[in-house]
Image (tube, rainbow, N blue to C red; front, top):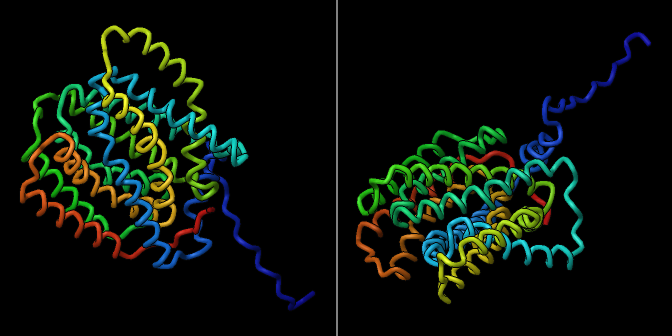
Length: 335
């Protein structure tokens, strides 16, 4: 009919070519269907800090565990512990198996969280100190943010990057001033690889938390790894049992790694990233290096000096600045 208005056709996002299933998981983290209020973002930061608190024990516990187990068994063994707990929890809650389009990022998360970070970290700690590991670990929040921006197109302001850079620089300068064993280039490369793998798995896992609860994400990660981690752990134990004689403390460290750093820490971490945003929530991890130094002082009798407190205040200030930077819309995840 002449003069009649034709209704506008709604715009439909075309799926990305090459990995449509994976694109669905990534798009779920970036589609601005609702704007998260300040209270939700603050809750996310609280959850992220809880995760970082548990992660901060990873380095000293691993340092203790490698005294009684091979570095490879330390990695696969803690994954078995986490996987058994997760299998029971998933069975009790009757959680559904992840749909096909989410399995790719879950597998990527498994490669980084179960194998990459634990194995490379354990190998590095055989060659250097936990203080020196903190030098490279200080870059983890920045690498997490960079991967998040590239992978999920999360937008952040220049103030965010400035705050992240200042906090990272403060940690690096401090760690370099007190780190030992820094002449081992291989150890440095191992830690760099561990940091990259960890940052990668953080982002990959967080992309799935818009489609399923974070506790289910890490649960399926460690459960799906059991067909690999159980036989690997058995073989490693058999061939290394004569070379190591683990003490009660070393056994306890391995168990705590499996329960806390490998499993429960991700409950809080993924919840925090999904609420606060991957790049922004990841900046809370700048506190992890300092917390690791605190536990090293308490558990390994290292002396905490005045510069430690100064750097702590600098890092906390940079984290607060990063959080106050303008934030993009965030989708509230599933409970």
